[in-house]
Image (tube, rainbow, N blue to C red; front, side, top):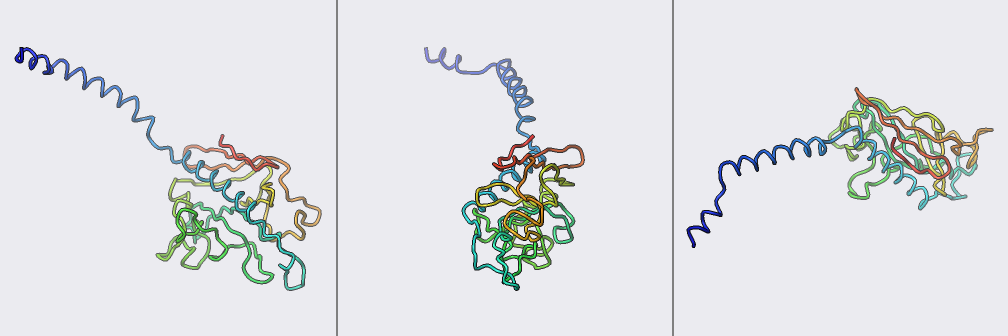
Length: 232
């Protein structure tokens, strides 16, 4: 009885071969589906960080009537949180982006980010949310003292070769007001909370952010009013 039981527990060569064939078929089907798509990964990351910028704007609206320029004009609205795409020598010539609020100095709000103005990585307090921006070592992607997040340098991390914006957004910038409504352009050029001269800065048309690599592109759409982000 024991001998019979032991014989039934063994595999024949044919059974082993059958198992190997099945495993090979499954591997051929599953592995391609689990391969990464850098363009799609970049789009998901950028969408997430646009939403995070909106979140910062809603919990930290920058409203402060004592915040004035050298001429005594209230300028708190220039400090709103924004996400800025850029490509320069400080990004290693690659496409990158930075999340910041233009708050440093009395009457500063120059439209450019410095280390103190950049959002802190919520997952790592030692990092700031830039993929490269200025000449200071902490925000220069090419320097060893870089404190930014290398994944925000989407050109180097994901092979993104261009970032184009059209529709309701311009100049590589997206900012939000205290209600989370998306705004366009550089806050530094505004002369009141919502207008610059006769120009309304709240987006009235959906904004498209097009990320491209050498072979394809993907479009992120930011809806006017709500700021809701979708990936097309």
